Image (cartoon, rainbow over all chains, first blue to last red; front, side, top):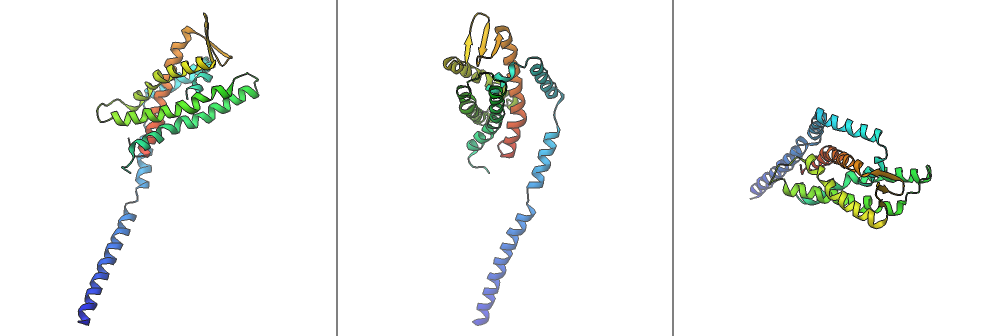
Length: 76
Length: 148
């Protein structure tokens, strides 16, 4: 009876420890931050020429017509 | 991260104009105190402080709500916002005396005058700026918050 009890406790302990180890390991292996950074860097690197042209046109517009700056700031 | 998507959309939308508000406020304080241009900041600041950030947040919620039904890119969705904001802004500016119209054109803040012919390119310039802000700033924040 005592031996059976010991085996049961041993089995329960092993099961519990395995579960805890598994969860901790899974958490460490699934650190998403580096992958997130890579994804953000990859996406931010691609700016099409059309958007550069639009940005340039807005910049030129503000240089040529600086009176528009207060109005733009009013709507931002 | 899948809970409260509309709250996250609102927060992502509000962030960009909130940061721009600091730039605008600094610009207008400098214009008033350094350049001595009598801009009524206390009346001017109400619209960019209270209306514009909320409009960005709500517009981003609308974008998220409509996303499954139609595939309008976020930049173009943002470029449509000036249609609403300029209308509300013009009405509130007229009501508060920030904008005065006459036969030659429009005068804002008692300092910036523009003829009616200039208003159309200015409006398109604002749309282009909104397109870029929505595509790159709000879109980036949407991706970071997991709602893109």
